[in-house]
Image (tube, rainbow, N blue to C red; front, side, top):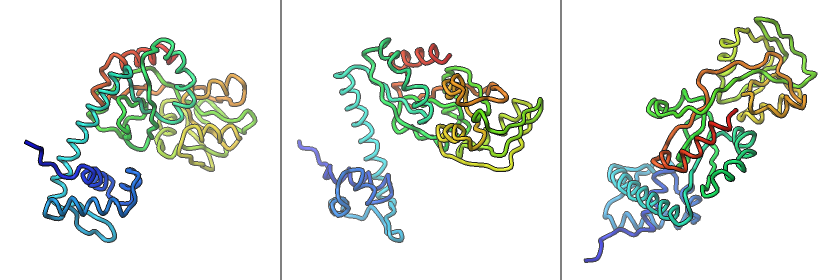
Amino acid sequence: MSRRLPPLAALRAFEATARLGSVTRAAEELGRTHGAVSRQIRALQDAAGLPLFDKAGTGLRLNAAGESLRRTVAAALDGLESGWTALREEAGGPALHVACSASFAMRWLVPRLPGFYRAQPMVRLRLSMTTARALRHEGADLVIAWARGHYPAAEQARAIPLGAIAFGPVCAPDYPVTAGPSHLAAPTRIDHEHLGESWAMWQTRAGRALDCQEELRFPHTHLCIEAALAGLGLALVEQRLVREELATGRLRAPCGFVPFPEGLAALPTSARAQSPAARAFLAWLRATLD
């Protein structure tokens, strides 16, 4: 007996539109035109015999029937994606998808990956960039992060410790700074837009009051570091990310670095976080995070 299925291409258009909340964004994701996606949604509604979306201003909003179908379709596509990924991994060897900040990837992880591949030549690693603003693991198996206060409690409870971290202010060699036993003064403080609490945490743990007249804000740590290198102010960074600049004298750390007890950790976000490939990667991280 043949299966009684809705048009499968129309289901993909429906699921993408429901998930993204926009026909335009769904068309971009699927590589189709806006008109083609709209026609597929109309065809699905015609086949179902009832509307799945309601008008909401200039956009669309799922109605009760559409939400019910969305849950069914999303679960089916998730299962299909998982099974297809497992099949491809079986053919190509073990794979691991890791998400981390762009700054950690560029300044620490990627330059050391040749050592991991020498130790684990059969493991294929895929990297995605996440942000400190919100949990965005983009389908990753592991998320590497130190600032985890915004993550759901269940995610935090599963965190796998990787290594200690220490933060300190850094600046260009000739940048004017006054540092005393209990204070640090400079014209400008450089802030990470999504880690605004970091300076307050540093002051508490360093036992120093910070006195700056101006503030510059950047969305990524590597931009904060570049701003410090350019002589724009004091940036607060983890010591591993600026070791080369400190060693060559391009930056200085007027107060040194103080430990942050949160430490660096990996958050498991899929079943593959328990795989042999994941365990090998985590073991390598712990050994390499000196």
